Image (cartoon, rainbow, N blue to C red; front, side, top):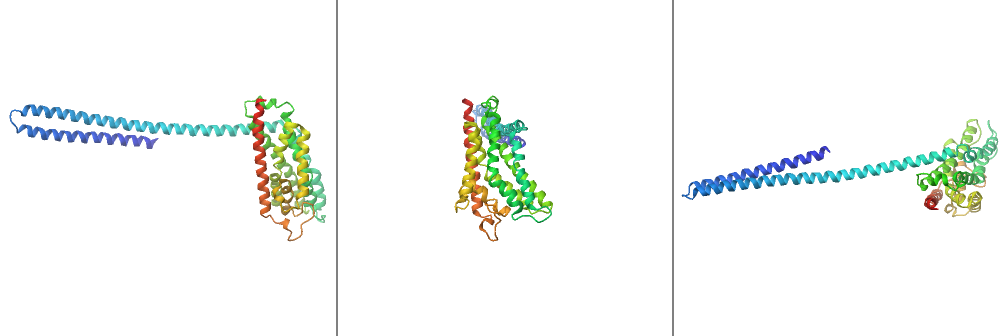
Length: 353
């Protein structure tokens, strides 16, 4: 604002200076004409009067020009200020709309967490990994003398190869049933876009899947701290993140199937696809094109065991985090984004039903 005011002041000053200069030039011209008229004959008086009239007209024209210049400068400055004001209003509007959207998503996510506070989703995420944590702790040999594979096989591998796909389907279906059992009336009756509720459900279910993997991580860290054989904390944290990313596609799939066709479809179909493709295709050279297979193979270099649960031999190809693993995670995340976006559009159209 200070820059605009300075610009207007400078423009006004220049206009007034131009007007004064024009008036001074006009005065000199009139004086010259008056001098020539004084040396003439009897027609000198009318010439002097004409010179005075010309002087008045020239001064008036100069003043009018200065006024027009000043008005034009003010108009230009006003237009610039108006444009800047409109742009500022638009920017403020976009910013407030973004903040409102963020606040709306946070409120929807908080609502999903409150609805499932004492429900099945949290219990599944907390309790389902515990038997495998116990087996991993016993195999890890707290204090030394662990079994072959130890916690990596009986804790991590047995968890993500078999129960994790079922746990994901159960968690997502339970989150969907929080509103699906009531024909989505708690969602559609709120002044919140249904698509925002869909994204909140997806984020909440995905957070619970990550929490279930963190339960196994906590057991792994505890076993290692007590002297047992288990992966390092960093390797365990990376395993939890990789398993969540590789299995993320099953969350929107189970949400949509459970909402549309019921709990059986939401649980059975994603779990069968995950188990069937994962176990059947992990030996294929194109395993990275199938997210269910990526969920098994991507964790192998982190925990040191093959998808079958056998410890990796030195120099085994599955023991390196290569480009295939990166490509597999990319495909899995792309599939998750596509399914989640399509589900949000489908969920938004249910408002008219």
